[in-house]
Image (cartoon, rainbow, N blue to C red; front, side, top):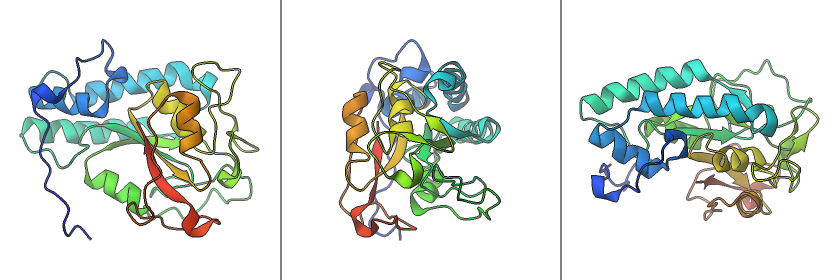
Length: 237
């Protein structure tokens, strides 16, 4: 339900931090202010982030599924809305990603495991993914997780080892290590992870990000993890 949700108010130019030299290093708030002022576009920001992913993901292994064509199509649609002065929501044109425990229609959610059938069907968005789309976010793809999000580091039989951007010899933590590594290295300013026993908070500490485990129910969780109501969905920024 959207009852009680506040209306979107675009940020004022004065709200923005001084823009970074590379749009991939801008925060979500800065990007929104740049879009509003006409000083940058969602397509430019998405291309900058995709360039960053191409440069760093082979070494860091933060993404396990990337959809550049879909992301650019979403960015072009967002750019058209901004040109009309009618952004659709709080994240219109902001590149984001979701952890590979979170359903996204059209993409496999393999949970870092060889036991999950890649054939799906994958026809349902988790509520968090659906709300990102409603808010206009440009969803880049899915970030790596240990098998079923089971530990405080990020490696799995399916996707291998995810590495810390500050020191690739170290772990980014887990289980939202792909989410943490992506945000810390500028491969998108926002990413959604999951947290049962520290899986957002540990990687935030290891990678120097902001991470939040919200109150259960504040961010809907469906389907529930094997940890049930202990596991929440929360952001990295």
